[in-house]
Length: 212
Image (cartoon, rainbow, N blue to C red; front, side, top):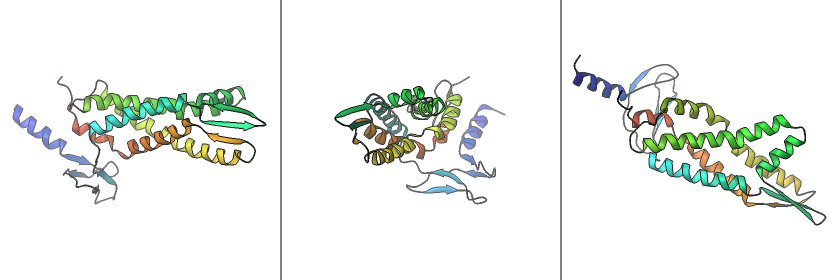
């Protein structure tokens, strides 16, 4: 087989997509805005139209990292009782739980609210930095695997909802004042939700592997 035939076959292969649930093969076509491609055999979602390009995603990731820093250095809430007030950050709460013999909970909180979101943003930023030029980043396959497994473990939305419920309940016993940290976490929750709605698998098609 000569080189032009190999190139043609590679191009055709990129236009094919396989249902990951029933292995049916389809020929890919451009989706219109709001359109979703579904498998005719098992009705699984094959692909959704993506309104956000790689440059837009990279801008969102950088914004999320700035908000992430603010969320971790600003106090989350201030509690007041009998004229005394105490404020704490996320890490202040984690350290407090650790010292209060709740090590398992503190480790889970640190992992799902700090380390996993940080790993997701750094990995995503690394991949998108090269993808905006149509290139695959070094360690692309490993980075995509990390994104696949880390994504479900970012629990910022659970934390924000839990914190809001705790603030409402604590208001019965204390003077409760939400601080900028909780609002930063709310913004971060929205940004991470946007990331979750984007199908990162398309980066395999938008980028080209470096020549061997």
